[in-house]
Length: 88
Image 1: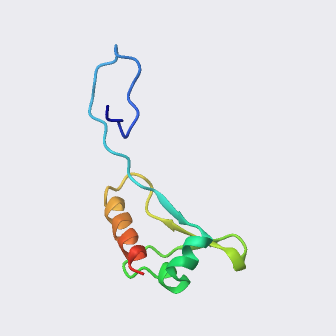
Image 2: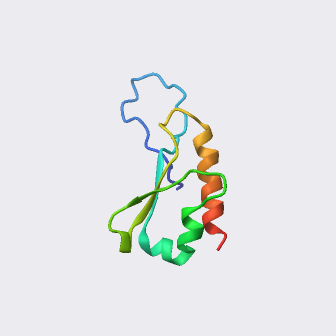
């Protein structure tokens, strides 16, 4: 039996309606992954977004803001970011 990737309504008396897929809002890369990828590579994606550093300087994380959850282009931005981070 396949699992659904998104929860469904338990109340079947409510009429069904189209629900759009979630839009990514942020992405945070932890210190260990930054070290594995390379700090300079992780901190400078060529097409944005520019990350903010979180935590102490010696072990900071990178937090990428992708949008406010209303712009579907954030999904494309997220996909480009992930492709960039995987190019190590």
